[in-house]
Image 1 (cartoon, helix red, strand yellow):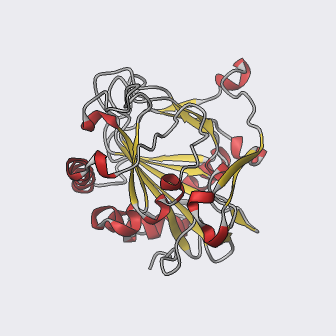
Image 2: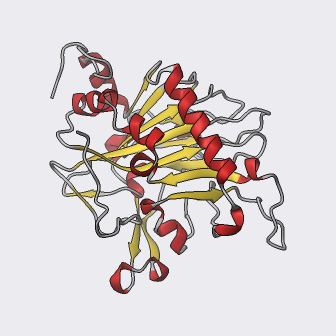
Length: 303
């Protein structure tokens, strides 16, 4: 689907579509309204307040190498609203070394289906207009995350491609919609994207073989292929573009675009909400993906 100009909120112009296809990312200021931003910030704060760490496994999100531990809690998180801790959140005795409010790295991965606030935003007419204007015939949210990027301790997320972790076949249709809920600066760990990198294909795939009856307790994780040293190669590193975004700004990310975020060394947080879509009209969710829905809880396309 191509449009000559946007005719409804969320719909992209032909110029924006061309830029997205050229660069593999697109910045959309004022995509989320102030009320929507406030609602998501407030809801995340409530979820953390109500969270009892003693009732959840100590699942840590490794921000540096993207090789997430394949513990059962992580592998089942596509069916829940799960809590993942920062590296260093616990001391050598397994006790929390920082306050609960500063220990959480992110929430995921079914916020878009299970939480009313995040579901309302993820499944809005705005999101439907956005995804369909990019040609998706049956846009379907499959993964969502609330990312805290905690002040002073928010870790680096190394250069990666989302399609490493979210794979469809026969056509690769992963699209990320990343929304800044607070202003993103060089100091607090803004996104950096590599223009045109989506033309080079997926360099690495995360594969998970599950046990009998798809038991996440028996999941075995492996990786196929290797990433180039994008940030170690001077000629490549200098081509990354910093995405300095105000709260409410959306960043569209092609599944094969290479992007990263630096550590947060500032005194302020950098909250963001991210939801990934696939097009179920032309693709199916690959069985080797780390995330698998339980029977009776299928992925639902936008209506």
